[in-house]
Image (cartoon, rainbow, N blue to C red; front, side, top):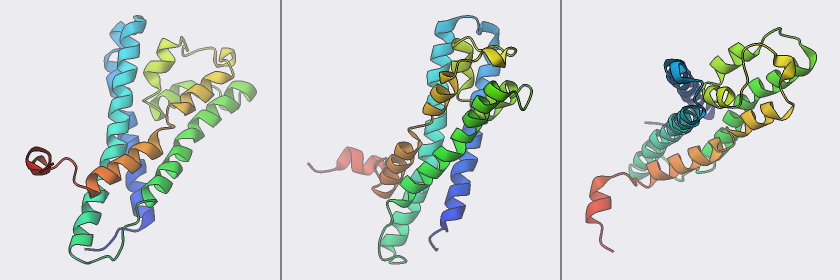
Length: 183
């Protein structure tokens, strides 16, 4: 058992983010029947946030567990705790690219209608965009600060990955440690 290269961890993180966005898109499309009720869209947005950040947490958690086993078996000498923070910032940069493209499209009309693919790529943002009243047509009417708000929704990715690695490495979800630990 070896430590995974950083680029593999980053690809895993991006894959889990993509899966979180796909799952969020599916949840939003399934709830499209009640899309005109703002309160339901806000609850749906909170649920999509939970799904997305849970998957960001999970990928780092699994690596933290693997790192703990390697350290216990003396396969590695030390732990690199900051690599998931760095990977989280790179994952954040990947997820801000669609928002930047949305802003450019709203200003310069380069892509025609980028809003529909944007909602599919950034599924976590989909219910928020619906609750904010962004419809399929009229991207030229999109206020300048909307893409900034959409990109800001991903700001907690480095925190989620850092906490996930810490929980995995310290084995905080082990029921034996939680229930029978001496205090």
